[in-house]
Length: 226
Image 1: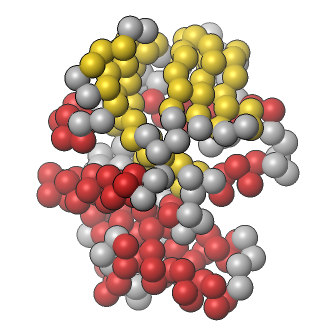
Image 2: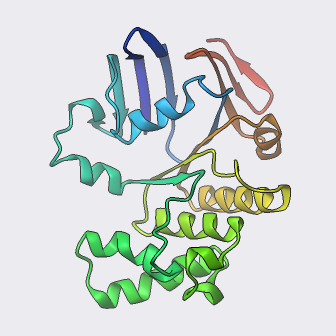
């Protein structure tokens, strides 16, 4: 599904990632953990094609991301749902409109939007908040709208970059339950976080980063030598 082959990413003379290798299998739930500046967000940007590696190859399915043209990139990004710490909701749009916007941009017909968006909002438990604007929602509710938006294209991969960073413990638990539920549907989930408590509660595979290098790859208590 996703593979990094000897990937290095440098910004000027600083290596954000230094010769890293890993694979994520279809349907897997993997957490990438590390302190701020360890390279987590750089991995996310490379997968979605926002950045290109200085050296090495990034594969998503059969596509080598760094070789895709600007015309080919939208098709890749429809396969990937992305969730951010700061939600990235449009403030002048309701919850319904924020989720619908992703479909409208791709030219989906109105009847399809009217059918799909309520399904997504119901999945995240916000069917009663469809007409609320972001300022009328709690932090946890905003993140659930963002999750609904990320799922509206039925992506094969969901990437969550510090999705619980702004949330309290109760809302963090709810968001993690949603991500686990999405994974149970067969969707590959990649979670980037600085919180060991978060990854310990999930009990799935964990890749640990430090200074742009993979220092540990752990699966359910089993350490994989890297």
